Image (tube, protein in one colour):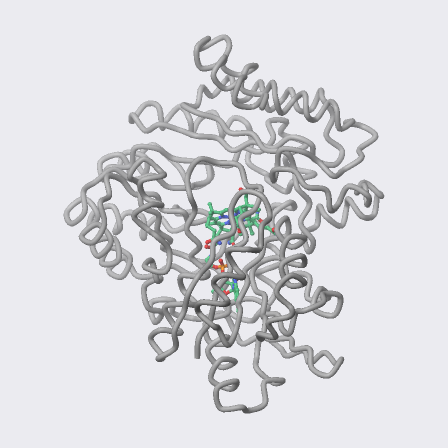
Length: 440
Ligand code: B12
């Protein structure tokens, strides 16, 4: 069977082209089982033509679309635009996993996948090929003759080493590497143990039975990295896991083998709670050049009570001090425009970023995701401006919230001024560059 994947990535800000691990993994499993796959990345403004061309050339039996919440409005448009081709359509990814009601409401959509999709999609494609019943496949909700068939989820895969390496050939992976300063991305794990109220991980964890946070064996990830650096031109590596440092023994083992067998610079995502001087030194010795951390909000009480991020500011400052001490660069992710935040509370984020002296800082505007506690807060308090929900803007550069305590105009102002405010005392040149970048 032929499966065409669609990766909607419309109105996303950023220089690097992105890879999609979910599609890569689904495609690898299908190919291993004798099916053919193709992929269309939708980038820039909404334009269905490239997908239509692919449908005409590749003639797929199934169209599989991945979707985060922000992209779903474009997915709905696409489903309408390709409806006439009569191809079976299925959507998966965090948005539909936490909003399965979308199946009933969405014209042109035949099924959705809730949670992990590798074996559900394989079963679906096999059943369609043999013209068998498709209404009782675990993880799938299927719409047939106006009726919705919803099925329970199979447990989370216990051992993710059983999966083949993600299919990188499906994308122009070398082009993706070149677009990101010759850096190749990997994931050693699935899931996150924390429950920040604005993030989908808390909801995704409850979808199925079993362990949500799983790491591949060090042997398996090292061997994939070796494979990729042999076949592509790569100068550094980014481990894109939600939090790479959850298990200290794992990090130690990884660092030891990585240094011996790979030995090129790498970056990870981490959390301050997992870091101490010793671990940072181990990371540094193995070639870790930068750690990226969600700081999100700098006012300790707000961060704890509204965002469920209980780490103290003292702990954050200590972790950044240690990173500096061992010579690892740091990057913070910050958000402005949370429900109940005020311009004054946001200044806590500016102050903390100034104090910790990170090497770089990124700011986004809060985006509410269905299925998260903070989305419910937005609904309960009537904070979402319904008329603006389908408005087109670049993801996380504007808000659809109407907050009495933080007007939209103020949120936009804080977003645009963020880098200027944190860098101007430190590096005037950098402050000006970022001021221009965010003022666009
Ligand atoms: C790594 C990562 C990225 C990477 C890679 C994206 C990717 N998914 O591969 C990059 C940096 C590119 C990225 C970008 C963004 N991300 Co991101 N990202 C993650 C992270 C940390 C891990 C995702 C991952 O790779 N998991 C492993 C793979 C194997 O799982 P998966 O992609 O979910 O796919 C599985 C299932 O979902 C399902 N599935 C997925 N698609 C499909 C399609 C079909 C047809 C089927 C049958 C099944 C299926 O089967 C797959 C295999 O089991 C998650 C957090 C998390 N733990 O999920 C956030 C997360 C997915 N990201 C998020 C967001 C918001 C974004 C951005 C919008 C940010 C931005 N504005 O730039 C963009 C959107 C990009 C896009 N157009 O989709 C949110 C989405 C929340 C939501 N409800 O919308 C998450 C959940 C984090 C959060 N804050 O809650 N991200």
